[in-house]
Length: 195
Image 1 (spheres, rainbow, N blue to C red):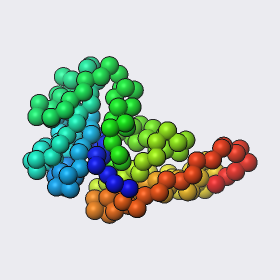
Image 2 (tube, rainbow, N blue to C red):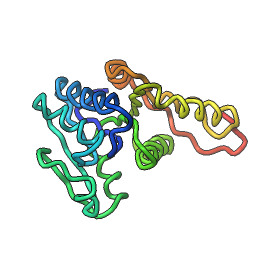
Image 3 (tube, helix red, strand yellow):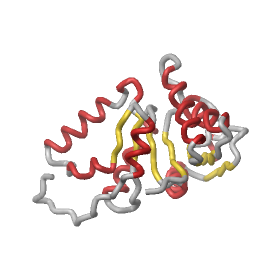
Image 4 (cartoon, rainbow, N blue to C red):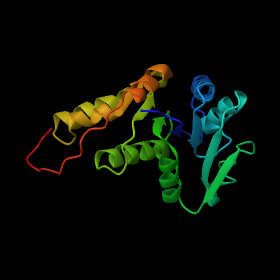
Protein backbone atom coordinates (compact mmCIF):
# COMPACT_ATOMS: atom_id res chain seq x y z
CA UNK A 1 0.00 0.00 0.00
CA UNK A 2 1.08 3.56 -0.62
CA UNK A 3 1.95 5.36 2.62
CA UNK A 4 1.86 9.17 2.52
CA UNK A 5 1.54 9.77 6.25
CA UNK A 6 2.49 7.80 9.35
CA UNK A 7 1.00 8.17 12.82
CA UNK A 8 3.74 7.74 15.43
CA UNK A 9 3.14 6.96 19.09
CA UNK A 10 6.11 7.48 21.42
CA UNK A 11 7.12 8.70 24.84
CA UNK A 12 7.18 12.22 26.20
CA UNK A 13 10.33 11.11 28.07
CA UNK A 14 13.59 10.30 26.35
CA UNK A 15 14.42 7.14 28.31
CA UNK A 16 17.88 6.19 29.57
CA UNK A 17 20.85 7.70 27.79
CA UNK A 18 20.61 9.19 24.31
CA UNK A 19 19.96 6.11 22.16
CA UNK A 20 16.16 6.29 22.11
CA UNK A 21 16.20 10.02 21.38
CA UNK A 22 18.72 9.55 18.56
CA UNK A 23 16.63 6.80 16.99
CA UNK A 24 13.45 8.89 17.24
CA UNK A 25 15.23 11.80 15.53
CA UNK A 26 16.49 9.36 12.88
CA UNK A 27 12.99 8.03 12.24
CA UNK A 28 11.67 11.56 11.74
CA UNK A 29 14.48 12.36 9.32
CA UNK A 30 14.06 9.09 7.41
CA UNK A 31 10.33 9.63 6.93
CA UNK A 32 10.87 13.23 5.80
CA UNK A 33 13.45 12.09 3.25
CA UNK A 34 10.81 9.78 1.78
CA UNK A 35 8.23 12.58 1.66
CA UNK A 36 6.12 10.94 4.37
CA UNK A 37 4.17 13.25 6.70
CA UNK A 38 4.39 12.52 10.42
CA UNK A 39 1.33 12.63 12.66
CA UNK A 40 2.26 12.57 16.34
CA UNK A 41 1.27 13.74 19.82
CA UNK A 42 2.41 17.34 19.34
CA UNK A 43 4.97 17.58 22.15
CA UNK A 44 8.38 19.24 22.07
CA UNK A 45 9.94 17.03 24.76
CA UNK A 46 11.25 13.46 24.95
CA UNK A 47 10.97 11.14 21.99
CA UNK A 48 8.04 13.15 20.64
CA UNK A 49 10.18 16.26 20.35
CA UNK A 50 13.10 14.36 18.84
CA UNK A 51 10.83 12.75 16.24
CA UNK A 52 9.42 16.11 15.15
CA UNK A 53 12.87 17.73 15.15
CA UNK A 54 14.21 14.94 12.94
CA UNK A 55 11.52 15.47 10.35
CA UNK A 56 11.77 19.26 10.47
CA UNK A 57 15.56 19.07 10.04
CA UNK A 58 14.96 17.50 6.61
CA UNK A 59 12.14 19.83 5.59
CA UNK A 60 9.42 17.30 6.42
CA UNK A 61 5.79 17.94 7.21
CA UNK A 62 4.65 17.32 10.78
CA UNK A 63 1.11 17.31 12.15
CA UNK A 64 0.71 17.44 15.92
CA UNK A 65 -2.38 16.49 17.90
CA UNK A 66 -2.42 17.48 21.56
CA UNK A 67 -5.13 17.84 24.20
CA UNK A 68 -5.51 21.33 25.61
CA UNK A 69 -4.65 20.21 29.15
CA UNK A 70 -1.27 18.86 27.94
CA UNK A 71 -0.23 21.89 25.88
CA UNK A 72 1.97 23.18 28.73
CA UNK A 73 2.89 19.85 30.35
CA UNK A 74 4.18 18.27 27.12
CA UNK A 75 5.22 21.68 25.73
CA UNK A 76 3.43 21.85 22.37
CA UNK A 77 6.12 22.02 19.68
CA UNK A 78 6.36 25.62 18.40
CA UNK A 79 7.80 24.72 14.98
CA UNK A 80 5.28 22.09 13.87
CA UNK A 81 3.42 23.30 10.78
CA UNK A 82 0.01 21.85 11.69
CA UNK A 83 -1.05 21.64 15.35
CA UNK A 84 -4.53 20.46 16.32
CA UNK A 85 -5.53 21.17 19.92
CA UNK A 86 -8.31 18.81 21.01
CA UNK A 87 -10.42 18.33 24.14
CA UNK A 88 -9.52 14.82 25.29
CA UNK A 89 -7.10 11.92 25.00
CA UNK A 90 -9.80 9.91 23.21
CA UNK A 91 -10.21 12.65 20.62
CA UNK A 92 -6.42 12.83 20.25
CA UNK A 93 -6.09 9.11 19.44
CA UNK A 94 -9.05 9.10 17.08
CA UNK A 95 -7.73 12.05 15.08
CA UNK A 96 -4.19 10.67 15.00
CA UNK A 97 -5.47 7.36 13.64
CA UNK A 98 -7.61 9.14 11.06
CA UNK A 99 -4.72 11.28 9.75
CA UNK A 100 -2.23 8.44 9.21
CA UNK A 101 -2.07 5.78 6.50
CA UNK A 102 -0.01 3.54 8.80
CA UNK A 103 1.12 3.50 12.43
CA UNK A 104 4.54 3.20 14.08
CA UNK A 105 5.14 2.75 17.80
CA UNK A 106 8.42 3.68 19.47
CA UNK A 107 9.41 3.05 23.09
CA UNK A 108 7.44 4.91 25.70
CA UNK A 109 5.55 4.44 28.92
CA UNK A 110 2.04 3.31 29.84
CA UNK A 111 0.42 5.92 27.58
CA UNK A 112 2.37 4.80 24.53
CA UNK A 113 1.55 1.15 25.19
CA UNK A 114 -2.12 2.00 25.68
CA UNK A 115 -2.13 3.81 22.34
CA UNK A 116 -0.44 0.88 20.62
CA UNK A 117 -2.87 -1.69 22.04
CA UNK A 118 -5.89 0.39 21.09
CA UNK A 119 -4.66 0.71 17.49
CA UNK A 120 -3.86 -3.03 17.36
CA UNK A 121 -7.33 -3.84 18.72
CA UNK A 122 -9.03 -1.48 16.26
CA UNK A 123 -7.25 -3.31 13.44
CA UNK A 124 -8.45 -6.70 14.70
CA UNK A 125 -12.09 -5.63 14.79
CA UNK A 126 -11.99 -3.76 11.48
CA UNK A 127 -12.15 -0.15 12.65
CA UNK A 128 -9.10 0.46 10.49
CA UNK A 129 -7.18 -1.53 7.87
CA UNK A 130 -3.70 -0.13 8.50
CA UNK A 131 -0.33 -1.76 9.14
CA UNK A 132 1.39 -1.15 12.47
CA UNK A 133 5.15 -0.93 12.82
CA UNK A 134 7.09 -1.32 16.04
CA UNK A 135 10.57 0.23 15.97
CA UNK A 136 12.34 -2.15 18.34
CA UNK A 137 15.16 -0.01 19.69
CA UNK A 138 17.60 -1.81 21.98
CA UNK A 139 15.32 -4.90 22.19
CA UNK A 140 12.84 -2.72 24.11
CA UNK A 141 9.83 -4.65 22.82
CA UNK A 142 11.12 -8.20 23.38
CA UNK A 143 8.82 -8.64 26.42
CA UNK A 144 5.87 -7.56 24.25
CA UNK A 145 6.74 -10.18 21.63
CA UNK A 146 6.90 -12.78 24.40
CA UNK A 147 3.48 -11.63 25.61
CA UNK A 148 2.02 -12.06 22.11
CA UNK A 149 3.42 -15.60 21.98
CA UNK A 150 1.76 -16.37 25.30
CA UNK A 151 -1.56 -14.84 24.21
CA UNK A 152 -1.51 -17.07 21.14
CA UNK A 153 -0.47 -20.18 23.09
CA UNK A 154 -3.25 -19.64 25.63
CA UNK A 155 -5.94 -19.05 23.00
CA UNK A 156 -6.56 -15.32 23.51
CA UNK A 157 -5.09 -14.04 20.23
CA UNK A 158 -5.35 -15.41 16.71
CA UNK A 159 -1.86 -15.71 15.27
CA UNK A 160 -2.91 -14.33 11.90
CA UNK A 161 -3.38 -10.87 13.43
CA UNK A 162 0.36 -10.63 13.97
CA UNK A 163 0.59 -10.11 10.20
CA UNK A 164 -0.71 -6.58 10.94
CA UNK A 165 2.53 -5.96 12.86
CA UNK A 166 5.98 -5.20 11.48
CA UNK A 167 8.53 -5.38 14.29
CA UNK A 168 12.12 -4.43 13.51
CA UNK A 169 15.01 -2.20 14.58
CA UNK A 170 15.34 -1.22 10.89
CA UNK A 171 12.94 1.47 9.63
CA UNK A 172 13.51 0.39 6.01
CA UNK A 173 12.30 -3.11 6.86
CA UNK A 174 9.17 -1.72 8.50
CA UNK A 175 8.38 0.52 5.53
CA UNK A 176 8.92 -2.40 3.13
CA UNK A 177 6.39 -4.35 5.20
CA UNK A 178 3.96 -1.46 4.85
CA UNK A 179 4.39 -1.52 1.05
CA UNK A 180 3.46 -5.22 0.93
CA UNK A 181 0.72 -5.11 3.57
CA UNK A 182 -2.59 -6.91 3.05
CA UNK A 183 -5.01 -6.82 6.01
CA UNK A 184 -6.43 -10.01 7.46
CA UNK A 185 -10.08 -10.71 6.68
CA UNK A 186 -12.19 -9.81 9.70
CA UNK A 187 -14.30 -12.72 10.91
CA UNK A 188 -17.04 -13.00 13.48
CA UNK A 189 -15.96 -13.98 16.98
CA UNK A 190 -16.19 -17.70 17.68
CA UNK A 191 -15.82 -18.62 21.35
CA UNK A 192 -14.80 -22.17 20.39
CA UNK A 193 -11.85 -21.00 18.31
CA UNK A 194 -8.52 -20.84 20.04
CA UNK A 195 -6.48 -19.43 17.16
